[in-house]
Length: 453
Ligand code: SAH
Image (cartoon, rainbow, N blue to C red; front, side, top):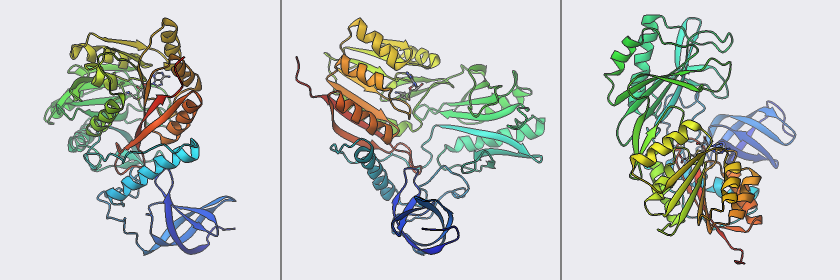
C-alpha cells in the first residue's frame, strides 16, 4: 500500500471526470493534477487512502505528446481550466471518452456515438463571468477563486472571457479605490460590494454590467456609469441585491440603474432577451452547433408538437418553432419564463405556450390535459431529471426524446432509466461547449421502440 511521501516514477494513463491525470501504481489509482495522458513523471504521494492515492508531479521525466504550453498565466492557481496544458485535439478525445465511459460505466449502455463537435473558439468564448470582490489586509482583489477555496486571486485577463470584461474590471478597480466603496466580507457578512457579474451578447455586441451588493443602493454610481459608457457595447447597468450570508452569487431582486436591465442576443436566427437571472448558454457560438444537432435529431415538421422541458428562456424550442406545429416550454424560474414569452413575441411566434413550474409536476398536468407531443426536449441542470419525470415523459409517449445535458453521468443514468421505460438511445453526440475546462455537453436522441398498441 502506498504511503505519504512515497516517491516513484509513474505513467499517466487516463483522466478523472474533473480533468486531472490518473496513473496506476501496484494496481492502485494515483491522481495527479496538471498532468497529461502519456506523461512519465516523478510522483510524490501527498495523500494515501486505502483505495486511492493523490500525488504531485515533482518532475516530468518524459512529457506527453499531448502537452502544450498553457497560454494563461493564472493556469496553476486558478481551478478553472484543467486542460489548458493539453492540445485541443487531445482535449476533445478525452471529452469524447468521458461521455462514452459514463454511458458504459454508469448507464450500462453502448449506444452509437457521433464524433464530438468542437467549439468554434477555444479562447474568449464565454459570454458570462462572475468576479468575486474582496479586500484582505487593505488590498483589493477582483478576480477568481483559487482552486478549491474561497480565497480570491486578483485576476488579470482570463483567456476564456471577452477582452471587454477585463476592461470593465479595471474600471471597477479604480472606481472602488477612488470612492472608498466598501467590499463584502464572507466572515462578517458586512461590506457592500460582493460580485461583479458581466454578460455579453456575442451576435449584437451588447454588454450587461450587474453589481451584486449587500445593500440597497450603490453610492457614487454616476461616476462608474460615465466610465462604463466608454466600453464598447455597454448597454445596461443593473444592481442585484444579495444580503444573505450564502455562497449563492445572486439574490432575487434586480434594479436597473441605466438602460433596460437586459441585453439582446441572436441565437439560431432567434432574438433572445437575456436578463440577469435567466439561464443563457455561456458559449453562444458553441450553442448554435449544439442546437443545430438537437434540431437535426428532432427533425420536426409542421405536423409536430414540441414539449421543451427545462426551457430556460425558451431558446432550444424557439430555434425549432418555425418548422413545428406548436411548442410548449416549461421552466421553474419566473424571470426566465417571462423572457421566454417575450422571446416568442419578439420573433413573432404565435404557436407557443410557456409555463412556469417544476418540470415533473407540469409534465404531469400536461399529460392529464391530454397533450400528445411527438418530440420532448429535456435539458435539465447537472443533477439530471427526477425519476418521476422520466416516467411521466414515457407515459406521454412521444416518438422522440432529444436529451441535452451538461453532465454525462446523469445523462447516462437517465438514458438507462428511459431504457427501462421503453426508449432506446439512437445516437449520442458530445459537444464541446467549454474548451479548456473539464466540462462537456452532450445531446442524445432516444426513440420509443415499444410496439404501438
Ligand atoms: N434549455 C435552456 C436552459 C437549460 S439550463 C437553454 O438551453 O438555454 C436548465 C434550466 O432548467 C434552467 O433554466 C433552470 O432554471 C431550469 N430548472 C431547474 N430545475 C427545474 C425544475 N425542477 N423544473 C423546471 N425547470 C428547472
